Length: 269
Image (cartoon, rainbow, N blue to C red; front, side):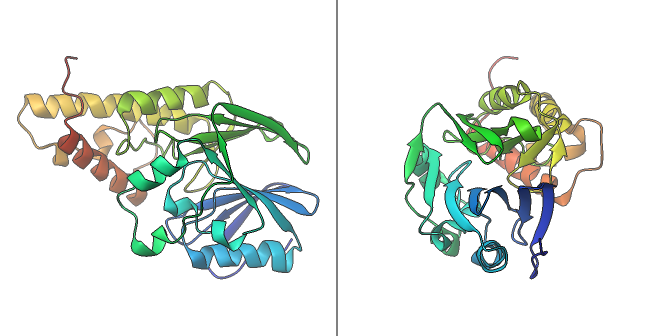
């Protein structure tokens, strides 16, 4: 199949499985083919990226988008939803609550909103092409997060349950994030897809859990020593591995600001 142009990247994860990554926030959309029909998991962060996705799927590949699955109802994963009005949107039962708690959304991103067609609480298993998808509640990053398991592809889509090799707890608690990471780990998949960035190995989930443990320790030590939380370096929190990316450093700083504002990690150790 042809390669999309205009700043969007595409990676083949199988003959019927493609990851589109947009220029905006490196936000992704997983394309799952069943003949001429398409199921999308997440929908990119900008209309420009979403237009390129639509042009590729419909204009170049001659496909028809039937289902849109939202891992979590934040606007940086919803830009394509209004470009496929004929497709049904499947989201967590807390999707609307999730959308309206998002506090970093721009006015332009707010226009990505579209009401869900179906709301899911619990789990849903169904066949799509050669896949037996399981879509299940894995709330942690938000109170309305779905994960999507593709056993035949040894692939688990965790949404923003992991952000890079860490966890982002601005909308939740470290305990809830860790439980969600543990549930994802229990699937035992060798390939992990997050809502931002490329496919990774299962070790990213272990790294995110390690980050949370190290973060708590660093926060408690900083408070005990009278040091500002904002100065805790990400290197003190990420487990051994590659250097922190700019993306991870950005969300680490947001984590520290949220911990300070919300008074997290103040109970007895």
